[in-house]
Image 1 (cartoon, helix red, strand yellow):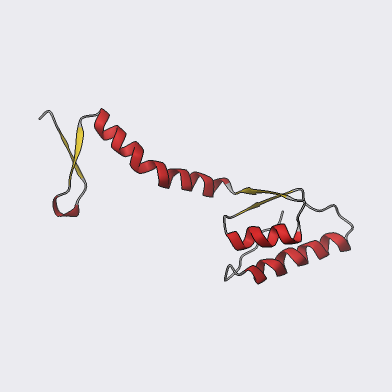
Image 2 (image 1 turned 180 degrees about the horizontal axis):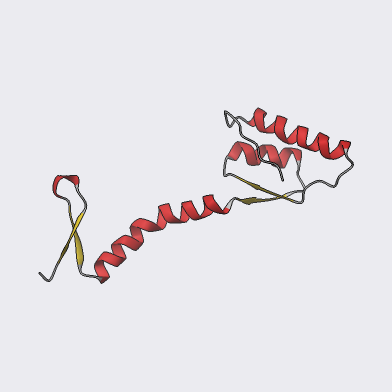
Length: 102
C-alpha cells in the first residue's frame, strides 16, 4: 500500500509518482498492482492509466459517498419535508421549518 501527498494535482507530478512506483516494482521484480484506489482527480487517473494501463482503477469510497450525499441531500430533504407537512420559511436567510397544520 502506498500513500502520496502532493502540493499540486498536476499530471507531471502524478507521472513522477507512478513512474517511480513502477521502477520500484521492476527493481524488486514484483508483480504490478492489479487495482489502484484513488481520489477522483482526472489528472491522477490519466497518469495512472498511462503508467499502469492494465491496472483496474476504483474511486475511494469516501468520495463516492460524499458525491451521493451532495447530490441527494436536497432531494431527500424536500421529500421529507413534504411527507411531514413542513414548509421552508426563508425569513432573514434562515432555514426554519414550520408545521403547516398549526
